[in-house]
Length: 343
Image (tube, rainbow, N blue to C red):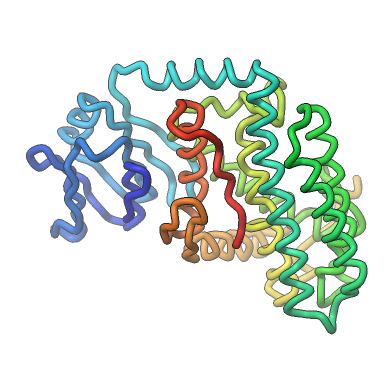
């Protein structure tokens, strides 16, 4: 369990939260492991087998402390919240910002910068660690182009042009993605990004990881009270979680792409774990899906130092931290959205 930005994240399985005086007590095996005064908390997020006493839930509702329940994998289940209007005010502000081209562009710019910086970092790491296995000239050319795009993005420009730069950056990055696959090239090759359906094993793997990432980011946004459907880079479309798509951009290369490459290059997924249907769609079997899920959850337990907060935290909590920082920016507590850039 860890406290970030006045939010208590409880990930210890079997933990029990109870009210003790004016404090929240976290018990494991009947022993108090943590005790925090209620006035120091904005929210409590419980992962998996974590339970709360009814008295604590009522107490938190009275004090405007939201309790969210997620599965151990991070899928949002439910939220306990008192009769307060804080979320309404936050959402109204979010809608106003989404209708404002300049404010939308400012957040979209931050999101795109995070995505391109992290994409360059993925390329840089492979060139640094495996110079004898990759075409360093081609990959470094892509890195240079991404750097050039980054300079354009950092200059104030319209939302439409930002979307153009985002698309160009993705094209440059994925054009050399096949160079990052270092083993079993005949079985795992990447020509271009294909979705709905994925047409090769690498795209199948990427799509599945992006789906897992989407669930986590969406759950994190649900916990903050932001409307996941109203984005700034991704505009409104029925059924599309625009804000979740915005927030996950910075995590795609850092978490999903790197994990896909590790699974392939370390031989953790096999070609026989995928099959092609008559329509050309490539699907993974149950064993491969389980392997990917276990690897994803394990990766989320890795600890990193948050570049803005300078606090150590599991990767799995980065989504919640970024969602809270975004909510604080929309509320006016932060001058800008500090996008997550891999360091």
